[in-house]
Length: 230
Image (cartoon, rainbow, N blue to C red; front, side, top):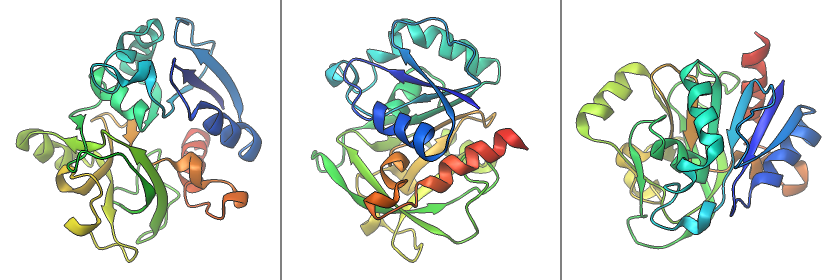
C-alpha cells in the first residue's frame, strides 16, 4: 500500500500516524502538505488528529478549505479510501464527505483518557479483522467530539451499517455512563454510505505499539491493510 498522510498547520498526531504505518506495519507512507494538490499516487489517504489552523471558528472548518482537500474530495467521490482520526474526522464532516457533525463535548471540557469501543459493523475496511464481541481500549483526546446527526440521518446510517464504533464499558455494554462526550447513540466512529470514507474520534495510532502497553488500535490498521489485499 502507498498511504498518504496529510499534514495541516496544527496537526500534532501526524508523525504518530506515520510511525505506526511505516515502522510498525511496514507500509509505504507519503507525507502530504496541506497546500499540495497532487496526492502523489497514493491509494489511501489518512487525515490525522491535531488542531488544524488552531481550531479557529470550529474544529476542521478552515482545514476543509485547504488546497489538498479539493483533491481529497475528488479522490473520495471516485471511490478512493479516506480515513480521518479525531481532527481528521471533524474535517471530513466539514467537507461533507461524512454525515453529521462534531460538537463541543457536553460538559464543555477537553477530555484525554482511555475509553472502550464496541464494534457495530465487522464488515468494513476498518473492522474486518476485529473478532466478534471484542472490546477495544483506545485513547481519546478532544474538546469537540460529540457526534450529532438528525433522526432521519441516524435512521439511514443504522440501516446502512454506517455506524462502526460506539462507546461502551469494558465488557462491551453500550450505556450512557460510558459516553465520554455526549455523542448521540454513543457513536465514536462512522463511514459514508459507500463505505470508502471513515472517521473516528478515538486515536488508534496511540494504541498500536508494544512500548505503550496497549496495541488494541493496531487491529484497525491491520483491517485496512487486509481490505486492500483481498
